[in-house]
Image (cartoon, rainbow, N blue to C red; front, side, top):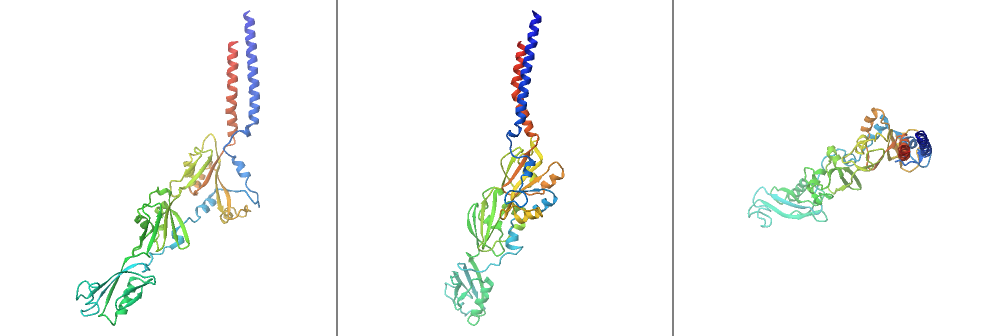
Length: 404
């Protein structure tokens, strides 16, 4: 009787094991066959490289490995610069009298009894004085002012000292050894317009000592946005250049002298890059600085995931000017897409030197950082799914065998 029960138990256990084995075989075969169909965050490193545009193609992208030469070429590209575009180290502008400026003329004579010694009270401080101050007047649209006994004199475009000499010459044979001082009481022509993300937009008058970009922004109350998001846009004539506010702080030579008629606009333009793939953070990531390098970008994206990321497959995607790409890839026929070529920069982080290359490779606004999954990642996913499928069957077989 007991022998029969033991035999039935062994038979049931064997049947349970057979069922489990059959499930394992079927599940394993199905999962291994479907490895390529499992979800993934993007192409593998080999796929990115192999899918680049062939020689002479009309579309597609090219791949450039980041080495010392490529990193050096990228780092040496000229950045937007006020100094390079506008001044090349020029001194403060020489301010001149302009139309709509208000000027005050004071005239001295060497002795009493001259033209201005007994001048009306509107012109002199006291009767019998040797000094006369002409009331403040605005430079007319024709660029002239009125000086008693000298007539209308053209002063627009002249320095105050030049106007003084011009008045002295006009009064030379009329007044007694005249001496003249010309003062600009209010200057509308020698101003800079400041607007945008500043506390108070204004037309800031310039001083004869010379005023720089940060000086006039301070006169307008300073910026009211985070410095890392601020860009200073300077328009002079037909040329406009934008430079990061933090870049001006980091490179004082960019804090150039402004010139009359300049327009300064503070704009908010957060610098960001997007991170995809095997990083700890798949998101749009702000620079939070005037500029960052590739190693800093990887760190800001959460670094590489040990169980997923392929250190051979660190890719940076951006559009580059055709002349630059021709310099990066000499002799390579580039995709014909106008002035810009899609470039995928590849970095291999398996070597320690690659970290130094990443530190010397600058990021740009709106770059895309992609870290490919390792080649074993699909298999790991399949094994995980495989385990979740056979676990219930194994548990059921164990319970069935125990009960029987």
